[in-house]
Image (spheres, rainbow, N blue to C red):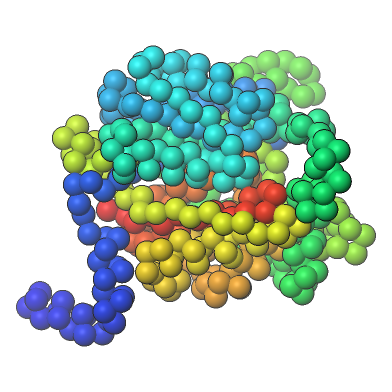
Length: 417
């Protein structure tokens, strides 16, 4: 009976569909599997629960949580790669120290990585490829950002005369908000539609938070926090995203003044929030994960990056998503869930529309407009969210993607076990 049902299903699918789907879902000993992915809560930069917490301390907390929840013996973790954007040197020294403080032995190597907003995903891809090529068997990828401590004027190195005198190179200095306006203007995106998209993100995140749908992916952290009014310091437990505004509508967003252009469409309500947070992902070769008795939550299938004009950096997902799908022979419709970072409503709406993606599959529990975008963290955070969504929906194939400052996009394919 089961065989007959399979034959009937096969008859409905083209040979390409059969091979593509079976290729990524099949299990092999040398698969690179995800044994767990978790994050801290995401909190408002300068005002939220982590405003007084160093990024390295957030990393310590999420690494400890990952080790505890997966049950991995730290001695088997051969390498750790952490993405960060704003800390000097991308946190190379303090984040290596954070690994040691979290209980990883000195024999575990460390790498700091920075590819702007995709840094957390690039860290994951680095560990994925190290395992896939046989360099290591078990590794941790992550991302962290304390925008409270590192965001603002002077955070980036000034350009030399050589760079500023080159018309193409100088475009890398265009503020991100201006690139959002460029995308909206070039592709005819209207503010009411962008506000509607942003309001929907808030509404989905509000519903998800109230239903406890983020709880399983969040590692609660106890931190010191000073009251901005009294200056009194106390210990608090941060276990919920504190940037999610309840009751947001497109109408309420419509009254906010544009931030980057007098008659523009981008403002504080339809752009990602400045925020703090960290996330970590444990990856291993399947055969080794099974030998060590580690949980297997998903499989990291592939990743792709691609460049685009710096002045239109937000269109990155529209070029990275088709690229990674083509590599695996998948169509956009064969993907069940998309996690596309909401740097700005303009770029996310464009990417969804240009790729022809069913919008009901995108950011099911809301996105960065609602709960924040700690730059280096987001790429790893999306994986933690995607694994939770697999559990909540029973879906199988997911894609994560984001635009990248200076004009790039990145995307990954992950399947549930």
